[in-house]
View 1: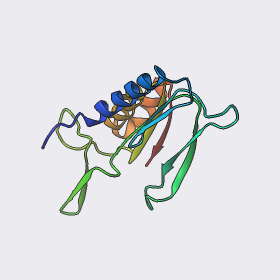
View 2 (view 1 turned 45 degrees about the vertical axis):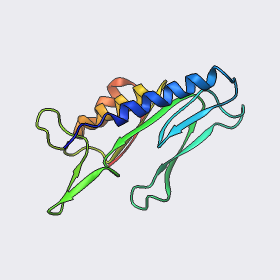
View 3 (view 1 turned 90 degrees about the horizontal axis):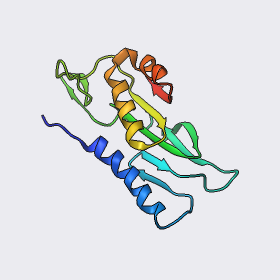
View 4 (view 1 turned 60 degrees about the vertical axis):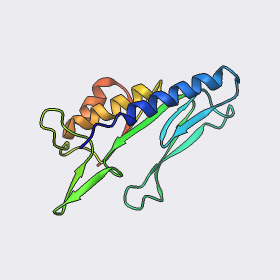
Length: 148
């Protein structure tokens, strides 16, 4: 077992990369590091960035198409990082009290926020709420998409 800070590290890197690029250009910029996304503005006044949330069954189709004009999206979930032991699927998001995977959590939560670090933290915190993930995000008053 290991602790992996890749999620928050990657989200921070996404935010920093946008900041560095904005120092040299005022163009519309979208930074995407494996699904952790941030942008400064739309590529044109009538055309936002279009980002798909994959269909979890086919993993090749788009389940939902989101439009982003500025800000960030980050996703947390157990659709790609899990293990199966004796026919039981264990997700990678662990309950900090028990050390076991969170139960009854959505398969995937995508959060929209002003920066990728905050979006990613809220998505992961929501996963930690298990069956109360959506209630937690409603209390945070953020836009989100949860797949169960």
